[in-house]
Amino acid sequence: MITPGTDLRYLLGMDGESHERLTCLVLPAAGHLAPPALVVPRLEAPGLAGLPLDELGVEIITWTDDEDPYLLVSDLAGGPSRMGVADAMPAAHVFGLRDIFPEVAQTLAGPVLRELRMRKCPTEVAELRAAGAAIDRVHARMGEFLRVGRTEAEVGADIAAAIVEEGHTGAAFVIVGSGPNGASPHHDVSGRTIERGDVVVIDIGGPLPSGYHSDCTRTYAVGAEPAAAVCAAYAVLQGAQEASVAAVRPGVTAASVDAAAREPITAAGLGERFVHRTGHGIGLDVHEQPYIVRGNSLVLEPGMAFSVEPGVYLDGGWGARIEDIVVVTADGCERLNTRPRDLVVL
Ligand code: ZN
Ligand code: ZN
Ligand code: ZN
Image 1 (cartoon, rainbow, N blue to C red):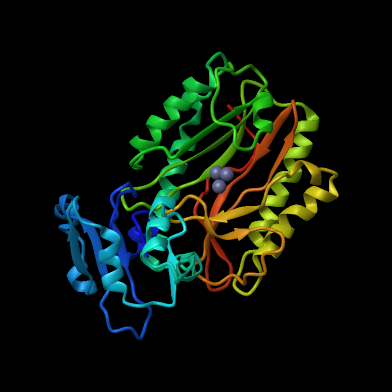
Image 2: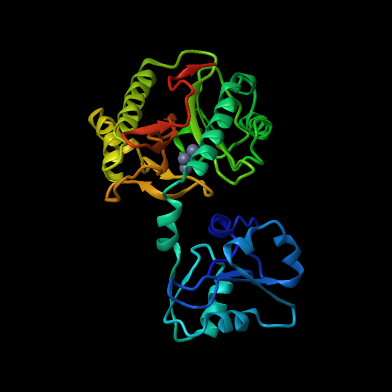
């Protein structure tokens, strides 16, 4: 049972979000005779024009506001013993389905879908490559935006506009973490004014029209060379990011790529300052499988795409992160972000 969201976009090319009216792809397991069917509110049926539903053999079943869509789903699904629901299905619909199938065990559909979504086909890799090039063009313009005397919010607004100018449909996130705010990995923007000598973490990305995302972090120094201690820690981080990317190839585990980033940072006494996993898969979602994290024994395969983004965060002081998206190739990986990874002084 797949409601609107990135899973449905992946399967049918259908955009949009779930809301209170049920739209749901009822996809029987292999071996069942019923064809897949898309239950959709009648008023939204015109929006399906242009989707390859005929080619895919998906029937459209419309319902009107005076009907119970869960009963329609029940008719289509017959008597299943198990039902997978999209990971991001709204609870209202999960409960609606449970009420109509009280005896049927609900599980998450994610484990089935991630086997598909995690392995990018060449068309998807091409989209991610284009997204990487687009966000690299925004980083290349950072000197236009990031200057002493401007607030993080002003810088962030300019970056968001540039993200669109360079080919994205919007900015999914814009992190401008200046000075002490850089020590918060998921800082947004604030009214803080950029000062001479600040170290600034810029983590930005968004979707292309295809829905595939960019995500790239660079750390800059503004107006002056940073202190020697900052440069020394940054050099450790840069080495760790290089080592982690160099560790990516088919046959190694996600955990080993995390370890390759973590070991040099820990050896330098900064292990406690690297407070997050090394990376996340990327595609139609900014964060998706595979996660590059300690304990993940998933074995990497060609076509898997994810971030390599170690960081160090000195509470109350400053932070730094370097993030590239990589795609696993036959014998290593391709980096989709190519801007300089040094601590560039703007
Ligand atoms: Zn993040
Ligand atoms: Zn990022
Ligand atoms: Zn990321």
